[in-house]
Image 1 (cartoon, rainbow, N blue to C red):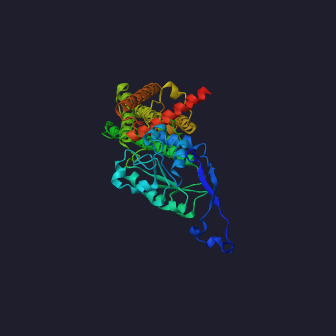
Image 2: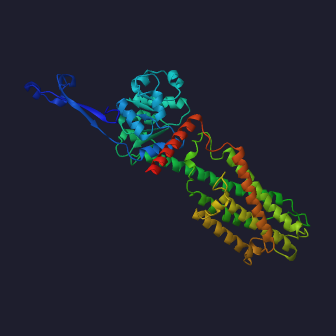
Image 3: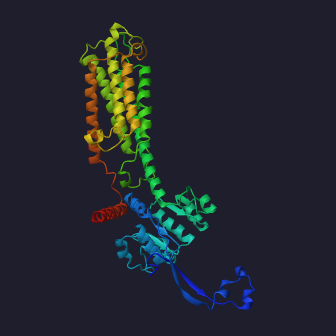
Length: 476
């Protein structure tokens, strides 16, 4: 009964030593010779409660599609009770394994002896690996890790003792306790947990997902911006003046300034983007998938070609749609009256390309979710670094277009007036296309929250416990 309540049970007994035994150094005596003929006094139950944050942390793991398994040296009844308290065992698990049938074949609570007795084929045939293994030995821990590897699992192992070092070394990620861990365990591990708190591991998983997502956003903004410039400039090679020379849609210096305004500040700001609330709803990603997934590559192509084509289309509109199409002479070298229209078209392209890439940085805050609805527009200043970068980039873009000398002599463009209407309409078209593209992705791509059957089961456990906790709070 005490073990079922999660108590560690000690048996206390005594006997009187003979005069000959009293003269012996008991530290060197054989236990089998001393611990005989003893009088039983009783049992003592010691309760070592789990930390309050253990249950929420385990539930957060289930939410993220991560299975938590307990390998312990405790009595099976004690281990099962503790596992229930921290959420490793659920009510449905108890129905599968009965009232802890510790010696039956294949329950979710097993002893090391019965688990070690199983062959690899018998273990692989189990519907689920045991969630709790009691009276665990170092070899049992390694065997469990091997079983998880055969099921294509990525295993993180925690431990503190010398006997944990083989399993810490064999796991994909070994995590040693920093306060209570032995030096051997720390040397065998990749990570040392300084506060010995399981919740810290869960927070690290959340932070790792945030960092990975932010790196993807960073790459998407940076590479798609470069693709946009490349598309604009390559198509721009088709424009030629009366002498047969190519008229650049942007001068080399203007391209560098555009890179300075749109490349580093927004991309770096996305690197400090906070984790979205749904980040732990996504299942673990495959270790074979890198930063540039097919989806990210598609985003780079779509946004890069979209911005580039819209920018060069504005150059054509100003030159041929609303202008007479006269390309002037030697407009790549200096400003002249014959190049006035070309310089205004360049100013339009510069404004379109710069502002579109700056707005695209906000697109990348959510690679699938809508960004330009009223709810998200109200949160436009949430990332203050990104907001500051976009505002400063817009101001500097306007200064580059209108500061005398800088515009015509350095950047080889000219201030614009009515062309701002073209720029604003183009930006609106770009935002609409971006939302339509994301809508199509949400309909056609596999949802991020879809997981394997096992990960789905874990997520349902988290959902049920969350709803139960909410109902309990409302009842109070």
